[in-house]
Length: 475
Ligand code: SF4
Image 1: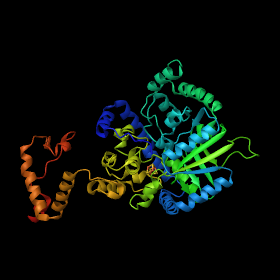
Image 2: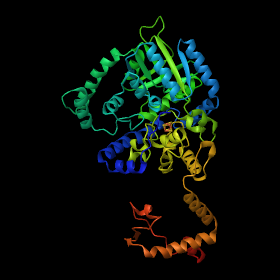
Image 3: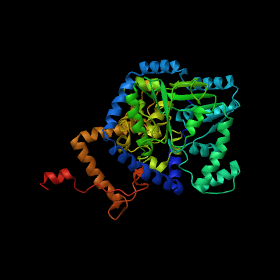
Image 4: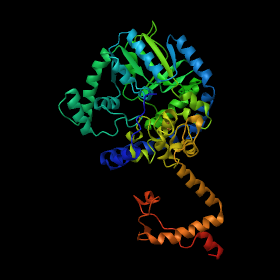
């Protein structure tokens, strides 16, 4: 995969927490979508239990992935499309470039696609003399600003309308305005020119259907439909896990996806694409290519502990509810996959040691699983990643993060399983804490190695008499 920039997670997080504009934007996002998604699940005719059915559908699809992908590829080919299985990002990028060169493409348009971010498509094509214009409004803003998306569905959530007004003045030369409809009109005008001039269109794929050999893309702006039908060539890139067996399964996943992503019953534009334009059709591309990307997913598939991560349909519902994402925002994660899904998938794709802060930074509160349309047990996988960091794992190339941390937790594990040791520890803590400053009955500051606990908050002191001691003396 393209190199993942994992910066100083803690420093980035601190910066994000101090950014008042970002904090307001994140709070608005979570207020709007966090509760809205739960309500949308409640209103489903089948009720929220449809998530459990969707979990089963995804489990079955992933268990039969080899057969489903072959069926999908056969049916896309029957529809006149071409299919390429890319083992890694390099293979996918080479293929896209080769198609672009065959058609002498100078300009391509792209509908929002996280997997194209994962492989670094834009920079690769640009390095080879091909301009790629992002057409989703949020992605367009991000591309003009030269930044990375900070949310899977709402990539420019960290920008205010004033920021966008200034950016449009600088980059597309309009007079300054921060009026959203005027800014949208300006973007639309600039993008229309790109749509008309482009020879090639890229898209992602929300879910493919093996039975029918089509992919579906969902958007609220119509840009993906324009990107996939106006240029002569359409290349869709999908992670190899994004396939449903039958149309019936596909329908359930699509309904849940729209509710999870934006608390909508259905996105404004859902496009079913199964191949190039046929002789009877008025529009559509002359060529359709489907790139099915592995890029580390086979390794996830092979490990029972993490296979469930491949059920993910990248809806971002877990970001919209996560208390950690809600404070540190997407850029802290160092990649467009952020929030709880990023905290599991990035260590698996980029290296568990390299991305260790991501899985260590989550709270394990379980809100992500409750919000997930396919009921993925993200907290379990976060713990499994932490266990690998604690113990090391040659199969995943994981080096033990810290032997002193492991020793501390081993000792802790022994102490809480031994009643006399635990009670001795409590007594020591109860006596020792008298040395440290208190205010309003709370401990203000603990010394290293416990100082982190009191850096941003006061903590309750250990009770002078424990519950078990009170119990023994008959309360
Ligand atoms: S883990 Fe679940 S909630 Fe999060 S993006 Fe994936 S499908 Fe959506």
